[in-house]
Length: 288
Image (cartoon, rainbow, N blue to C red; front, side):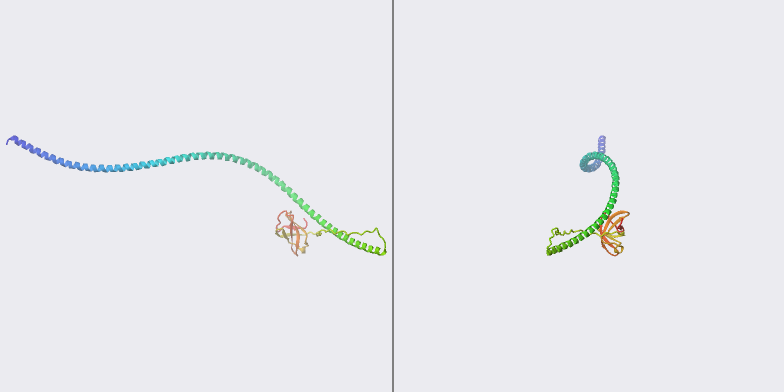
């Protein structure tokens, strides 16, 4: 065997060894690349799945944001409309405020005039009250005079009634005398043409005279019920039915009481000429 052949065999052996090492390295490296590829592929698939999930979440968020934007836009429109309405209400309130201010001014002016009018009316009322008090005093005096005149008139009427009774009695006696004279003339045959029969006058009904009293009595009211009042004095003090008691309070005329019932120590009567409501404790007297 030649040397060249040997060299070739040696070179071929070395090349074979190198090739085997390269193949072994390639196979090992290929296995590592495959595993890395599979790992990367799995990771890529996981990323894709995550990306799809993120896309779905993004779409959901986007849709939610669109819905939220629509709601916000609707609320913004409502708020704008509310703002316009509030601005219009504010303008209306301002106009009403101006009108109310004008009314307040007018009312203040009217109140001032009313106060002035009330002041004048108060002065007029004072004057009217003064005139009324004077009129009441005059009325009381006139009433007292009227009571006195009424008492005197009743006394005169009683006297007139007595005169009418006396006249009736005289007419009856005259009639009897005329009848007796007529019988006498018929029996004696004497003619008496000048004598005429007298027709008796009819009686006129006269009111019963009220008793007249000229005494000074004083007592106090012990009770008032409706139009009736009771006094603290009675027949033992000289009270009689028909008496008129004048009720006063602080020198002010209140009313009259005409006595209708009399007991020993108390009496009662009806209210007349009532100016004010009488009270228990008011003074009552026959002279005032």
